[in-house]
Image (cartoon, rainbow, N blue to C red):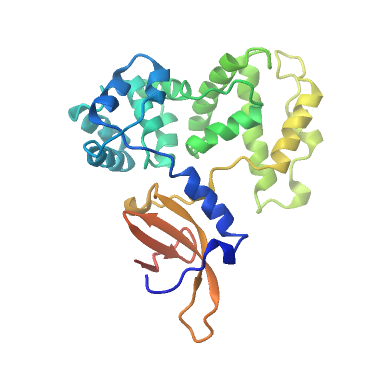
Length: 303
């Protein structure tokens, strides 16, 4: 790109978020063929997480596998099985989705929320990679939300939150009375988060704390949850929205821009005689830097 791009120091309020997404999305490392295969087939989930990909021999196949997944997750299972990356089991596929960079977080969520037995078993194994021990319910939901996007269909959300409730209760058996309580509260928190932080809902119509308490009466086998706990959940969500990283929030349907290496807002100098600076959404993928008026609009330029 021939035009100048303003450095983060010149626009601190916007590039600060952009630079955070850069550091967060650049932690993935490549792995060697043998290590990847051993990790995928190891019975130990801890081993699967701890092994790191190294070497360039697997990098090309791994990128192809990621592209296959972003196009069609089901077909990617056959592709990876043929290349010896994994066996076609829910446990291995869950590990692949958890450790492989460049996967669509929207596609991950849609697959994990699927109704088929394979999808639901994969969901269970996927969540076993995450340790929610010691986290509040809201913090645990944040942790999960950073890994993939919740689907839009209510039934898919139900399946994911049911598995999440089971995993959260395993990690924190003494916080709530049962898995059912965690499931109901989790769904309630997601609905509250949408209500409080949706700009299309007028402030006068947003759910109040008392409304939240009323909605969750009698959910503990007919008994009530400690009001203090519910109040804390409400305040946590009110003060800090449960959301994905900014670079993951505006995922494109165009394969080129799915799961880019970097994405975020920057200011760019215009070509007009005034030379003014305007904010654009930048996406770095396949060694090309693209910019847009907004995250969802047609491409303007690249270099």
